[in-house]
Length: 142
Image (cartoon, rainbow, N blue to C red; front, side, top):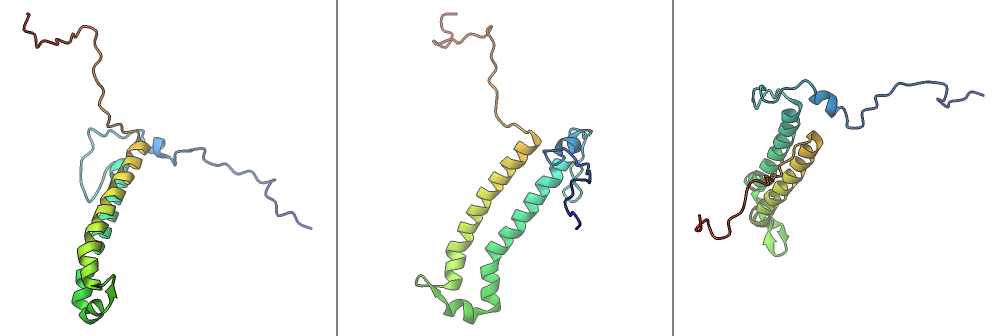
């Protein structure tokens, strides 16, 4: 009887819990990186462009898909009725704007996840200085 259990085998696994992002980030000088939309030079730019291009393709399909389908098959798109509206009208008037709105929400969520993944913080920090005083009267007494 053979034991198929792999307890005897030792595998060396990479212990990167962040998917290797920290290792990829090291050695990248973001200030000297050239910005090229077709050839991103940093891992952040590559990941961001993946999101941008994916959202762009989805947007093009959602916005131009119903119009193109109506152009290619006008009989089918006008004969099908959904909620009392012809399909081409429903998709163009309600589906496309709603889809674009949903895509913008999805982009914002993905971008926030990417910023969190790369440690980018967009919060503004208020300067805390004990030497600054706040004049409540607009400085009229001075």
